[in-house]
Structure formats: structure tokens, C-alpha cells
Amino acid sequence: MRITNEQNDIASVLVSEEEIRARVAEIGAALTEEYQDKMPLVVCVLKGASFFYTDLCRAMKCHLFMDFIAVSSYGAEARSSGVVRIIKDLDTSITGRHVIIVEDIIDSGLTLKHLTELLSSRKPLSIKTVSLLDKQARHDPELAADVTGFNIPDEFVVGYGLDYASFYRNLPYIGVLKREAYEN
Ligand code: IMP
Ligand code: MG
Image (tube, rainbow, N blue to C red; front, side, top):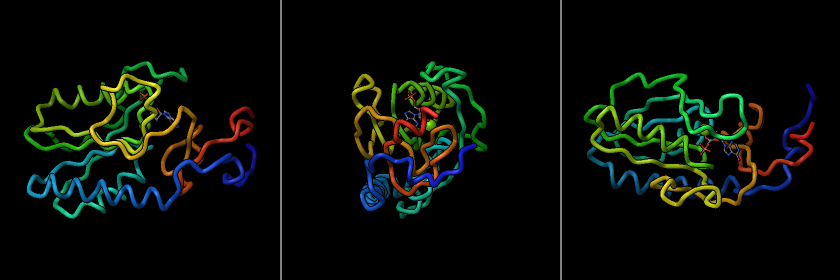
């Protein structure tokens, strides 16, 4: 394995720490307003959404419950198959509850679509989807999340939870990877 300072592999910063902080505060305030008396179950889609999720939960100033789900949509291929396989299910029942699904990024949109369908079948009172990032050019507009943090161009990004081959999740910003970082 190559020993490297991961910052050196970033071509450019697409969304800075400050921009993330400001947008998370905004979304948190809107959700606080909307869910004030609803005690929502806020669901983190592991692992990519982890930093966004914890920051967003802290920005919500109302009672909420936290739970975590891990899904795999890619199998062995690089492209999304659209089939969601649950690797770790929620610990709690969502029937009759208000659910907020927190995702990292919408690319083809198929992961979130299938996850939403799956959780809908468990008869929650409501489901809202929130995604930090959205590559709008890559999917039908109706596959966008209900709430989007940032629309971004069709580039492979890492950081603030998003990975390439499990690396770069701990970068504090969203960055575009240099070509040589994934061609090695
Ligand atoms: P979709 O089903 O094509 O929308 O895939 C969404 C998932 O693909 C995300 O939850 C990410 O795990 C992964 N993904 C898509 N684009 C990127 C990217 O630019 N960087 C890192 N992960 C990505
Ligand atoms: Mg993901």
C-alpha cells in the first residue's frame, strides 16, 4: 500500500468546511421547524452519510431518535445495479413513525429510490429524504432527494464521509480526486 498524505491526492476543494457548516445549519433549522412535535427517527445510511448525519442531528433542536442502516447497491461492479442489499438493518421498527433518511450523495438515484421503497413497505407515517450532494446531470429529476445540500458536477468526489476504496472519508471537506490517485 502506498503511504501518502491524503490531502495530496485532492485536485480541488469542491465544497469547503465553512460551506458545509453553513448549509447543515440551514437544513437543521428547517427540519427543526418541520419536526418540532413529531419525534422523527433519523436514519443514517452508512458509511458515507456518517459525518453529515451526526452534524445534521446536532443542528436539529428537537427530540429525535437515531438509527443506522447499511446497504450495498454496487455488488462487484462500479455502476449502480439499483438493487439494494441490506447489510445492517435498522434496530427499531419504523411503523407509525416519521422517518428522515440521510444519504451522502445521489448519483444514479437508484440506491435512495430502492431504500425509500423498502422502508415505505414498513408503513411509516411519513418519509423524507435528505442528501448532502446531488449529481443532477446523472439522473431523472424525480429521483432527487426531498432536500439537497449541494448540487455538484459529474465528478468523483471524496471526503466528509465519501470514500474511494475506503480512503479519504475523514477529509473535512468535499474534494475532487486527482486522476493518479485512482489510476494507481
Ligand atoms: P446511486 O445509487 O448511483 O445514486 O449511488 C449512490 C451511492 O454511490 C452513494 O451512496 C455513494 O456511496 C456512491 N457514490 C456515487 N458517487 C460517488 C462519488 O462521487 N464519490 C463517492 N461515492 C459515490
Ligand atoms: Mg452511500
